Length: 273
Image (cartoon, rainbow, N blue to C red; front, top):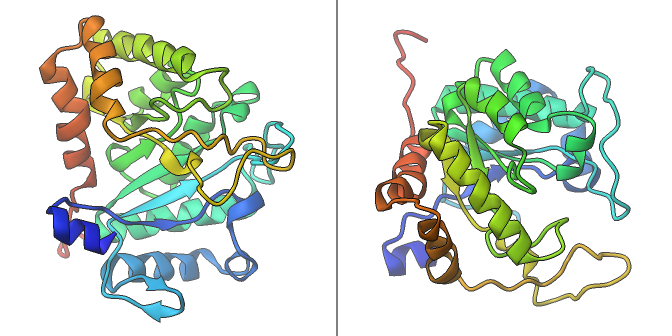
């Protein structure tokens, strides 16, 4: 990532954080307190991240949090100990992320599992915890909100001041085809623009689905190896939006202006702190 940034001149923002509790938080970190997890995040953001047991000079620029059942057999997350469909350790990690992000001034980007929409609004549950710990909702991007589009759930968190991410462009996830998902997301995006939420939307792929080392198996049926070229954003997705009346100004807003604002580091005022 560092080499790509240097050779292309592109600003690559690395992320520190954890995937959902059921498959992404190693045992060591399950034993850490909120304070210890906060120190870990702050170190990654201000000192440098560790890779292959070696310290590097490369600092993260944002934090990722994640919730969801994430099992091979799809089912929603059960009710957790704090009255939300969020597991106990996920709750702890989210609170630590809010403390670290507030201390450093960075953004938080989130992962939810769409199955959880069957039992709750996972976007709101994540945001509620972050706000409880003092996080500015304007620095939070809630991911996977459009998979499939959940307009009611999105309006809840947008009205709370947070941002939503339209991702999986060209990549079906829990949807029968990329065409079906792309069209549904495009229609929903236009509706949110018309409702005045254009300043709170970001756009991305979610390209981890392409894994050259593995194929689709009975054990891992979700890994569809959907390789989507980066040019797809401009050869297919942008033309689709323009055909629905989305303007160049609106595209610049969700592709340039909004992420630039959200991912900028707001250095805390030491006097106010």
